[in-house]
Length: 339
Image 1 (tube, rainbow, N blue to C red):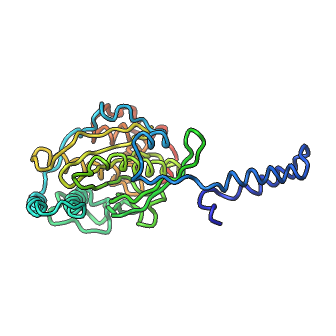
Image 2 (image 1 turned 135 degrees about the horizontal axis):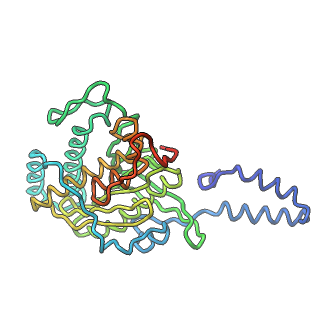
Image 3 (image 1 turned 30 degrees about the vertical axis):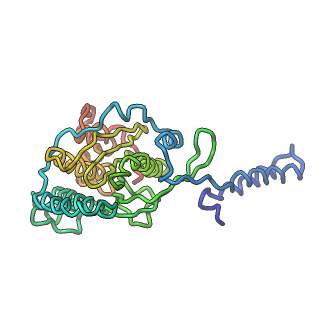
C-alpha cells in the first residue's frame, strides 16, 4: 500500500490484539479507536522541497543549532596538499571561456574539474580505500596487493534524489526532499535514501550563490537524519556550495551544531590552495567515519578512529583537542558498529 513508505505495518497486529483484550471498551468503541489510529497513521506528511527551505525552518524541523553559524568559523588545521598544475591550467582555460557564459551549467564544469582533481589526490594518497583501482602515475606512494581493506569504494555521484520523513517539535510529519547536485558516499544512485552518503555539494550561478546556503543545509540535514535513524555511529555531514569561483563550506556535527567557513575565491592563489585542501580533507575525513570505506586497516587504530571520530580524525583535520584516553591495548567504550 502507498503508506507503507512512511511506517511499518507490524504494529497493526499488536493493536488488534490489544483492542481484543480490552474489556473496558464496547465493540463500537474499539472500532472507532481503530479507525482513529489508522487515520492518524496513514496521514501523509507535508512536503518541503529543499529549494523552498530557509535556514530557520530547517533548523526547527531537524532540531539543529545554528546560533554560531556566523561566529565560529569552520577552518582547516593545515593545508597538506599542493594544487595540481593541471588543475590550475584547466581552470585558467575555464575562466577565459566563462567570460562569455555565466550559466549554472557552465559553472558546474569548473566544479567537475575541481572534484576530479580532489578525488584523484585522495585516491593517490589512500589507494587502500579503493581496492579495485590502480594508482595514477602521480601517486605519491605505491600500494601492495595486500593493502586493500575497504569493503566498498566511495564515489562522487551527480544528481541524487534524497529525502527523509521527520516529526518536528510540534508533532507534525514533514517529508523534506530534493536533488543534490553531487553526493559523496559508498552507495549507488538508487541507495541515496539509505544512509550511505557522507557529503553533499550544491552549485548555483553567481547571482543565486547565497540561495544555495539553506538548500545545502537541507541536504546535509537529510543525509545526517538518514544515518541517525539507521543508528550509525558517526552522523557528521560536510559539504559546500559554489558558483565555480566562490566557495563556502558547511558542516553539521553529530549533535546538530552547524558551522560554516569563510567565503573563498579560487581566483586568488592563496584561496585556491585552501579550497582544494578543504575538499580533499572533507572526502578524506568522510572515508574515516565509517568502516565500510575506511582507508585505515582493520584493527585498534581504525576502531578508535571511528569510535572517537570527533576527537581523533576531526581534531587532526580541523583542529581541536586530540583524544588522549585511548587504551593502547584495547578499545574502550566501543559502540556496536552498524555501518
